[in-house]
Image 1 (cartoon, one colour):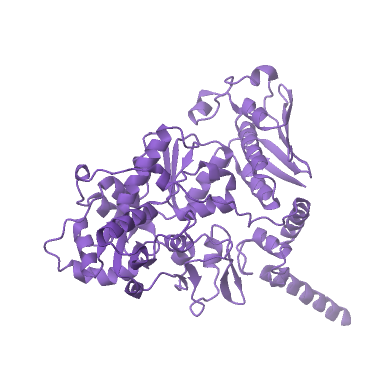
Image 2 (cartoon, one colour):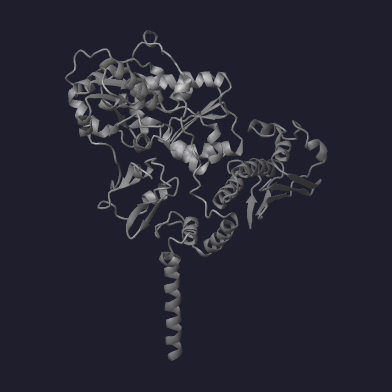
Length: 423
Length: 138
């Protein structure tokens, strides 16, 4: 039912609680000395990958061999990919390099981003958006809203992502050009994050998958870097403008929306704060761009380059002349979600409201007996969550080391007293 | 069940913490999302009022099987003319507070809009008590 790119390399896990405490949906617990991911709660943000000092949290992506299964292979680049290579400022060098690796076609997701910007503009001008409209480009934010802020689902701009738009375009073009069957065409994405990998596998808003797999930036980097150095005369492949490319860093998407009333926040903690405020009704903006990763997609955990360096490099990229490649045949209906985002009530204590109320009272009671140090040593992220876990029946208070110490002191004191009495 | 919150009178940075906490609890219990939205908006506005106008106080938020009752009590200056305070756009906020983006005179009208019942008791020089009721089911 659930596929998650984020997973655990059990051998490397020390059972420390760094990831447990850093998880924005409280989806990790340490049990029996290893971190366990509660799959229903995980939103694939990759915070645990960033935080784990032992690199025990990993992202599952596809093996490069997957291209062998198709007759015609297309590779798609995320805008943030362009910022990964020191000394390379020409997008065409990177795109040419990918072709040299054996791909038949290269397509820029930045181009898909331009289509999404155009569609968002039309929708906003025609009053088709619920304000404040929330960008749907970051799959982590969509999942976060469905789990923690279901009331804001209506505010999301119900457009498929630039990656999906790009995939549908390039697939159509390839079928026309080659005359091959749809199933013989492999469309792949170089992903900066586990969430994109997950969204490719689960294709939440589509009827059927349009992308056949994803390779991590890290894997492609090693393969591509030596090739890039050999390119003297790059092919002219790039079609995306700087507007599309800057979607790769925070603020790039909202810069293209036809209103000055925009808010952009990046980093999952900051995004949560904005969503809280949106829910309270005290944010007055036309458009809100939220990126789970710090700095936007350049901050994706599978990227190689420092996100601030990558962002700066992207801003100075030599790109296609946008005038030469106008957007053709914008069809908003083709870009709308084909399935709605369903609220997920995984945080609820019970399906029965009255039972849930009783459980909440029990949580409050147990919480008062806990030390409130939020040390995490029991494997739950905080004393409050510990109380919740006890009531949910997944743990007991026996493993609270602070309480254990108190109990030990009490027993020692008692022993000493009875020994004293003996004298 | 009742949650008790102390609200500091000058702490603009942390204003809204009580409503955030109570909201999180309602979500876990499974209160309908449209009710949570109403509670969030009304409670946040009232909490801000307690900070700005009431100079701090406390809040008791109670969840009953069919309704939410939230009481804000402050020891502030009190409201001279409640009827006038209820008018949209009317505000006694100082320029300093307006500069912080508050005090547009929409607080009380907004609270009324998002609640099923709102009672205000106020005595000049002593303080104000606001009781909000939001029904869980239509």
